[in-house]
Length: 407
Image 1 (tube, helix red, strand yellow):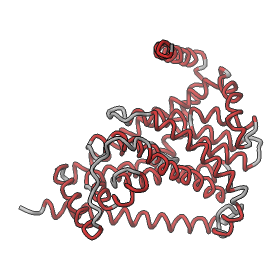
Image 2 (spheres, helix red, strand yellow; image 1 turned 90 degrees about the horizontal axis):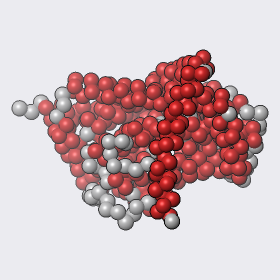
Image 3 (cartoon, one colour; image 1 turned 90 degrees about the vertical axis):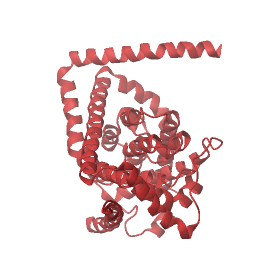
Image 4 (cartoon, one colour; image 1 turned 120 degrees about the vertical axis):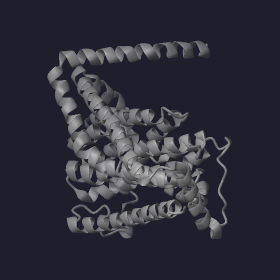
């Protein structure tokens, strides 16, 4: 009986997909003005937010891959990443880029590590589950300042978002734990720097591209990736508009109202969850404009950012399509991420608030934080990050110079 149900479900899948595409095409013909405005909004968001926010990180990540810095970090951080997250040390680079630049860069880098044989399939699936985040620029700037008009709320959202994903990393370390793992590196701490340097030099020798070609390939590949991301953003902007016109968002909101009840979300916030099912930015914007308390807005936005939307899911599916990585664990992780982040936000505003105020009285969770305090705080961390990236890049370029100057 179960087998027959599975066969029927598999047969309905293609039919429902074709039906959905036909409805979308018909709606585009019937409502051209609304669809055009929706596509224009998606294009504007891609060009004004996504491209300047992600392009530098994409280029840097490609350079780091070509210069062997990923291999360097893989050996150096193996004693940290393996016990905590049950992934090789190479995952530290993916984690750093995913936490600083947002989705879908972690999927791109994980797919490259898998293609190069640096992680197993299960390790890649673990890695992609806890390194997919909303970008700090989106949370601290677009949401906290642009939508909620209170920069002090940015650390609340970011802390809950990153804290929930870090917890997911420790949880998913047990996923597929009986599957074969990649060979662990040596844990001899005294020899780690030398082994890391040797790994980087070997990676550069294997790559073999001149510096000019490496830079050109990094820019070309990064921009092609961004074009794919832009297409997804525009498509799902149109889908949300069509769903709103046809009344689908209203029905989804009624269903999602029950999912948000454990976090105290009202019916007014459920419409934001319905839009967030499709696209994260639109869902967060609707949540920020809902006539509900700020605490409820934060919980809804955290739930939406943790799920990330079908747009991000489609982008990740496109990035890993050339590998054997499966999307099932990633989807489960996104659902867990959303619920955990919403729960942490509620705790920050409830039982844990006195403790957090004691730990960080200067800026965390205090409404009306002066711009200067926040600017100095985040500028300092940005300076440290840029200094670290500069030192790693200098290390890679130095290794390449000494490698190719020999006769």
